[in-house]
Length: 223
Image (cartoon, rainbow, N blue to C red; front, side):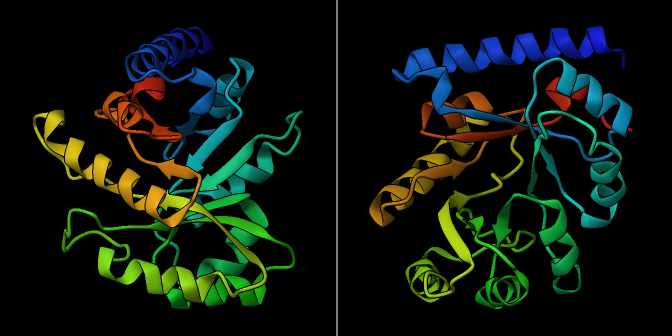
């Protein structure tokens, strides 16, 4: 994919974000676009950066490590978000690479992060709203207790909630998932809502997303 393609794709995505914000009576500035760069090479990520992207999301620590380091020359430095499941043996490396971790899905992982962190790190708690057996995340019933425990950890700053919506043929089917996560976020007094991907980000924005994680609509189909 050429930089021209990425620039055009970004313009289209930003236009769709703005339109979704208008429908919801929100300002586009309320929504952070995170370009999901898993499987995308560093050169292509740099092209997206040159086209104005400042936030990138990676799923796997081992894939992100060489990419993040090879792009350390970018100025200003982009913000790297870990959006995939974090294994306990990858915590130390993740803390070296990522500014924000979206996928804190257990109290044990939070404690591991806190022990190894050398400064305050923003985190989001992953919630399995749709109760899918194949997905990670806290159950709704566990969330209040988890927040109470994690908020005591000095190196973690809970900024909000994250979810991965079910794969469906009709995006409208996931609207209740997004709506429920927003309700939970509001009830807990948190700020951030990381929800919505290429197939459903407009609906997520209409339901209150403050961060959308978009890959294919920017970089094209994965190899």
